[in-house]
Structures are given as C-alpha cells and as structure tokens.
Length: 271
Image 1 (cartoon, rainbow, N blue to C red):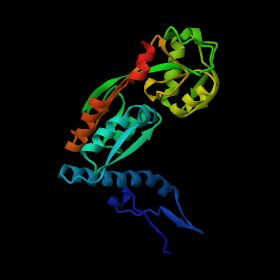
Image 2 (cartoon, rainbow, N blue to C red):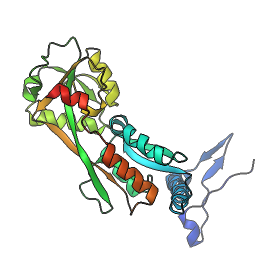
Image 3 (cartoon, rainbow, N blue to C red):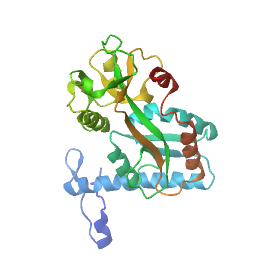
C-alpha cells in the first residue's frame, strides 16, 4: 500500500504537507490531525449540498439532515417526522443530535445540518419560526412520599431531596442548576446521567427526583408529576441558515403544526 498524503489549504499557496505517516499501519501526523476536521466538514457539506440540489430540482431522493438535542428527538420530533414522511416517503431523515444548545448552533453555522429544532437562539440571522414553549416538570417515583396533589410544588421545598442530575456536558444540567440556584439551593446529587429518558427511568427506580421536559414522559409513567414553582420553561424554534427549499419547508410546516410541546396526558395531570 503506497504512502498516503493529504492536501490542506496550504496547497493553494503552493505547499504540500504530509498528513499521514506509514508505520505498521497508517496514522495521522500532527498536520493531518489538524486538517482532518476541516476535511470531514468539507465532505459532509458536499454531501448535503448534493442532497439539497436534488431536492431543489424536484428529485425527491436524498436526506434531510435535522439538527436537534437528544431530549427533543425523543419528545418533539416523532410526530412531525411522521407527517413529513407521509408527504415524502422516498426521502430519509438524518438526525444530527447534540447534548447542548451551543453545540447545535455551532453545527448549524458550520453547515452540518439543513434545519435545526431546538431552543430559540438568542441571535440568529437566518429564517426562524417559534414552535412553542417547552415546559419542565418535577418527577418522582411511584413509591416517593412526594404528594401528587396539589399538582405544583415550590422548588425551594425540594432542597433536601436527592436529585437525579445530568452530566455537565448536557444542557439539561445547566437548566436544573439554574432553577435550583434561583430557588436558593444547590441540588443534592444521587446520580448523574446524560440522557433525559435515562433520568426518567432512574427516577422511576426511586433514586431521586428529577426535572425533565414534560414531553418525554410517556402515558404509562406511574410516578408523580408536578409543575415546579416558579415554572421552568424554554421557547423552541425551527430554524435554517438560508431560505428553505420546498421539502425542507414542508418539514418546517409539519413541526410547526404537529408539535405537542406539552402532551395532553401530562397536561391533564397538571390541571
């Protein structure tokens, strides 16, 4: 196998730099490691550009790359994707999922997704449409001594409880920490997890109480669900870098029309 070389941006200036060295197997040089993320981004952008061109020309094949957060892919996207796929059954949806809103915005700015669904960016210069306000709720296991009525609880009254928390890279960790800080306490940790669905399962197992998006809770959850006082909410939007093509626009319409940010089975429990 011949020694492999790669080209970086220096090629345009008349320079060629070795990006791979040959030992028993090929491995990247420091220059190669520097160039690799840019090469991957360029290849991904080229692939999405081709897919977008096919969509714009009316050829209904390819993929729609949807950037989102892990919790939103569980609680918000399924209904919208079902409607969109009925309109475009030959197309595929590719979810590009992140743990934190900042990572999602960075990915959109870098062209890693065609459209994003997530917390409304503070400053976004492309098309954006708000789809609703996501509400977070307090959850506890079925054997918890936390009363289910009334259907709200002061966060300050939960200062002595054990909490199922989130790992620091997750944006949900910052939401819980900020809510507790505003109520005057630091949550006492029982366990940390990265995923909202895992947090719900840990709560159900009796490992502590949690603060999760209401839309991830399934109808069969038999634990306690309470609205925190003060409420914890975040606006959600669907946004793109440029004016969406017709197929992307159909997804925007589907998620704007079909999204149930607060599921009826949870709303009934909180009323």
